[in-house]
Structure formats: C-alpha cells, structure tokens
Image (cartoon, rainbow, N blue to C red; front, side):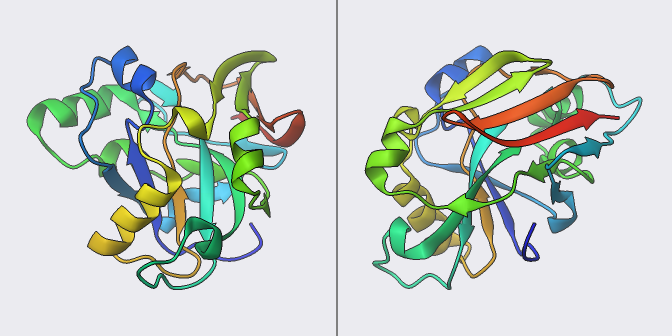
Length: 207
C-alpha cells in the first residue's frame, strides 16, 4: 500500500444474494462496521497468515475505495475517491455467527491482524467503466465470486454519504463496499487471485 490507511469502513450485506446465502435479512440502510487499520495489509504476491484454532474462516472479495480528501456535504463519489483496489474481508465465521446471536460487536470476527488485505491501487474509473467491469475472485484457480457495482443494494454514492454523515469521512480512509455471493471457507495452502475485468490485481497464499 502506497500510503498509510486511516479508518477502515466496511459495508455488510450490500449484495442481496450474499445476504440470502448466509440467511440474513437484506438491510434497509447501509450496515457499517469497522476494522482496525492493522488489519489492512498488502495483497500483492503475499503470504497471509490467519488465526489458527478459531473455527471456520471465510473469504469475502470486495471493491475497495480510498478517500482522497475530507468529505464536504454535496461531494460526489468521483470528487471524493482517487483510487480503488480489490480486497478480501476475512471473517471468523463461527465467531461471527455466535456474536450475531448474542447481539455483540463484530470486531473479534472481523478485526484480527491481516483480516483486510488489499491489492495495489488503480485509478478510480468513470461510472460507465465501473458498471461495465466485473471484479472476480479465484480460489485455487477457480472463480468463486463475481461482483459488479450495478448489483449493489446501496450505491457507492449512498455509501459515502451515509458514512460521512454519521461517522465522518476523511483523507486515507478506505471503504470495503460489500461482497457478492460465493463466500466460502479458507484453509492454509489456499491461493487467491483478484481480477478487475481481465486484469490481475493481486495474489496471495494462505500460510
């Protein structure tokens, strides 16, 4: 990552099919949670070490925005975001399910070290290109997830406005914008490749 990360915002259940695959209700407004900045690491031919003996771990591939300047009301997402990346929101699924049942915060399941690896950034594209381009996740050479901003429940504009109005949004904050259907388990030895269209953005191996 070329610059230090500030706040790490994440959007839960932003694709209808993903919410349904985990048996969750589709939210009426953006569901926001945070990860510590220490969770963000480079996903660029990296070996990623995840917690051991913590139960089932899931991968969740996502489009990630980097905020270029402090938010001012009325700003468009194009004015606010300079670059984007792809990322993996690693989740301790057994822990997460237990926390949800108890109504407790998600940090133990979402906020561990290395839980938010990011590919190198690319320039944030125009809306037409965003809508014309899918991002995909390949696990051990097989495509397991495919997402497109057109399939998001809440648009990128809605997400930045919602976060900014409630929590604040400033330079070097990043936003994981939600994962499409196809999440699944991770074990040591698994490899991941993240693509923007036909462009390989980053790879990692689970140590």
